Image (tube, rainbow over all chains, first blue to last red; front, side):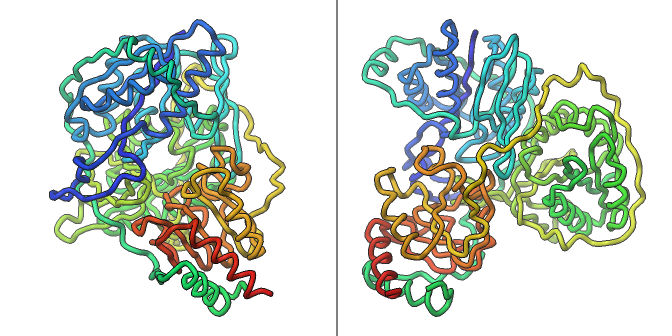
Length: 255
Length: 329
């Protein structure tokens, strides 16, 4: 059993956001990067499946510049067996299809039984790379998955629907799943894990040139306009509390 | 056909109401393009739903019909809609940004070597480029907006977030209904979906609460929850949370507000340490009044808050609890 986890490295959640001079992205110089949170859940699911399955291998794959290696090392420290860095300095100029093609090429050569990835990225949030990857590889997929079980020759997964509904889906292998957060509890890397990670294989392969021009383009980023006129309340904590009480009493009328 | 095709969503013969928001978006986009809008509904017997669409201002209402489309599968929907789109050749395909669309629309777009512009919260056109609309999406959990354009040739696939367009803005008119019968075979459909089910008995009905105190990532750790519990108690409010709090198991899933939890519209919604990602906002933006307390003055929650406090929740919330207790006694 071979499980590939496709991971994206994204800016940390609390990262300061400064729009770049060309208005098309944010300043990257002052950013710290981390694993995309839904991908962390995908990795956790893979590690738990390996623990249940016994003879499984977990391979983590990430495309991007050299900095993504730190995120791959962390995944190795948590328990992944080996890592592949797809070196690609122009990732941001490729659209979802272009990124999925880069991933597909490397992952295809691995012939995995199962591919896991997060349901969307914390930065662009297009929520499509996994599904497009499955389509390019010609394998079935299921999205927004909370639980994964091997069942016979295939899988039985629990898929989240809207408004608190769920559904089980049975599917053959090989398959791709996009993992929702909250289906499992994330582990921390142990000191032993961090030590071991240093001896694990981290292979770098070069991404192929983009085969087609992007079909969508992000033209401009900007701070969102306010939809409501927000009354900002300021002062000491006591003053703010008193102001809120006034509002709740006389305007909202809930006290 | 050129123009706009809207793919509506139904389950067991009942519309997903976000479909009509997408339909309104489709009609408005078609009007701006000087083109016509059509709609499609997929199922094993969608004729009655297509007939309902015949009273809308549309060129055509397609009933995409096949016995294998009775229960949703990505394989079935992608194959059926691929055939319809190839035959009708629309410039734009609009879909509601539902869980189902998230499951199949990226694969459908891939069949056309296209990328879905997903989770769109606005459509603009500029006078000098009326044929190339701008689709607005959020980035970085709502901290930024981005303008996207499609690069022709098409079709251009777009999914529309809930609440972006008003369902009651759909224009009435007449439409010719047409049955479209795709070629499908059982071996094309690889997944076997089970019946949808609910897990908890939903003992907590947040939708009925007049006041909700909701807590997010900013609370830091489980041990800090009592300070918001005390505020909720002082206000006589139900306690709710954004997804990460429930993911961590700090509060039960049934207290979650947002696209994967409950949708609420209380008299007052107090958002504490919640940054306001779109998945949360769609669950609470119908609230009559919103008070947000967050350390980041640029947090997107302030875009929809009536009252905002940019500050340390650990200093402000206990003071607020005290002040409310005093005011009530």
